[in-house]
Amino acid sequence: MTIVCHPHPLYGGTMHNKVVHRAAKAAMQAGLPVLRFNFRGIGKSAGEFAHGVGERENVRAALDLLSTRFPEVPVCMLGFSFGAVVALAVGTADRRVRALMGLGVPAASADLGFLRGVTKPKLIVQGTEDIFGTRGQVETLFASLAQPKRLHWVEGADHFFAGKLNPVQTAVRCFLQEVAAPPRAE
Image (cartoon, rainbow, N blue to C red):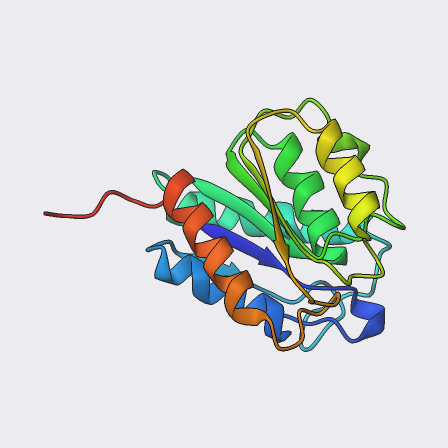
């Protein structure tokens, strides 16, 4: 199963974001149950923005719910932008999570040091023109990470992968098929 977290709530981020939608679609194409949800205070969700702390609680609650409903299905944690930081932080610390994916990782502003030493499979998908995680910043982060890890650059893409959502969806689907997809019936 895959949990998909959306970008920053204070800047218009919701579960209906195009990147989040395409990431969820990729998980479904890989044959996995998927959940995308709004963080607290967004849409019809109760509460208010909690600077990443409360949003991590939201992700843990989603993980608890899905782990109860699908106890035998491996969990993959995925997020876009702010959602990547939240998803990666929760997924790093939770033993139920098998793989981690960050799309448009905001390496310029977020401390992602918690990822160092993590041996779960990791995928970072980043646009080469992303101003919130430049090529140099993301390559430095990636070099500090333990194996297994994969970095997929989307040429010419900005932070929102405008006009470049197909390569993002393909990268996520292929990674999930490798690390978490259920075996196909023959």
